[in-house]
Image (cartoon, rainbow, N blue to C red; front, top):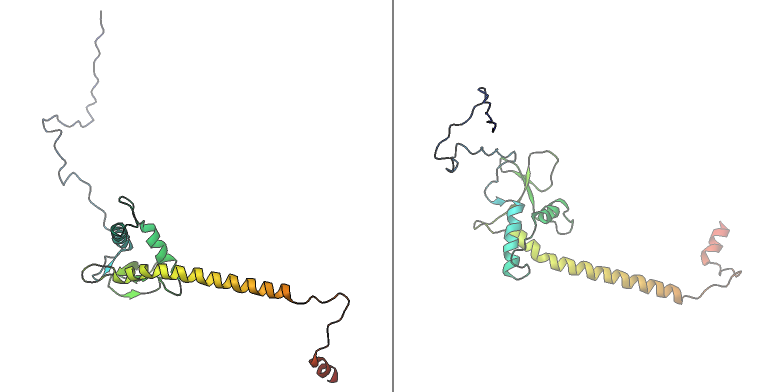
Length: 182
């Protein structure tokens, strides 16, 4: 004899009625609503560092400096924003919701970092900064080379200087007589 199993149905549980359209695509009412951004909107004439990273990726790929599928990461752009040099700072502006701007951020002031764009949407100022990057890098390398050469020349000069014999007093200075007279 085989046992028959019986289903226990809980009457307090809502079970959707079976219909033929179970595989129908979700309607817009079924999708969760997007949360509104807490950041102020981007005013005209500005764009985000992330969009600059996308534009730079496209440029570097077209120039052959990045392979197809490689991207210039937005985190790198944000590091340029956060760690701006004093000599040639990354051209970022901290813009408020009303469109006013500052060049230095203040913690929790309600601004967001944005880059200026031309009317056609190009990042002319930021791309010019990017073009100068190689010049700055070469200049820093040359400065380091000059400093090392100067240090080596100073060390060589010191090595070539006559060594004073031990126990021999150095010649008195002409100022020593003036000091004794006083």
